[in-house]
Image (cartoon, rainbow, N blue to C red; front, side, top):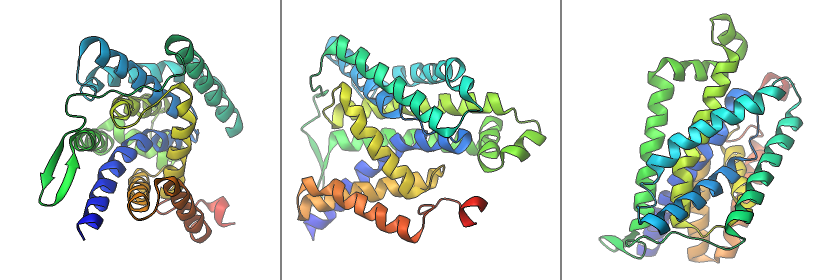
Length: 292
């Protein structure tokens, strides 16, 4: 029983981190209908910057997110203005190719600067744990989870309590109706892209502590995030949260009672089964053209 409780607790902790990482991807898709393949590369870029700052200055890797988050928001805004806005009326495949090319550029630059070596930030509390009864909670995962929940709550508050957030939600749910009431599509898309990219500022800093990474590991991360978003429903923030928790639990339960090597396979089997029953994902909205 203790082993099961331990596995579920760890699954929820890591699921919270996955939810933060996937939130930016699903937010961008919800507003712009763009699958940002570069989201995984942004995460690895932030992880590399965090690792370098931790090594050179001794700053806590998770607190480095206070620096990287606004920088990634600015980078997201610039990428939208310089690249994404130029293909606004192009086919979805064009945006996939463009963002995939951006991911390759980031991977190449990181490989030149840092080499293809695994990196990982290991602060002083990396091997320490909290004890709650018989359950052991690794401090690194607890701090990462708390940082992820803090950012997700802030993101929820922005989307529900501010005019900017209401504009983004309106553009997500009904772009034509939002335009009729004066919500500018271009400005809203730039804000959504900047906000979605900003989430990698925190996600990448947490990644640098919880997982070893190297420049080409962005392929692994974008495939994992796409799996979460597809399972939860493309463009649905609550869906991303549910999909992330399912992935976290699948990983820890499979690793506890089977083998860690099978955890990814189990997760994708869950996706296949869910999509056979609900093609729009667990919490995704079914579009009129899907139902036809």
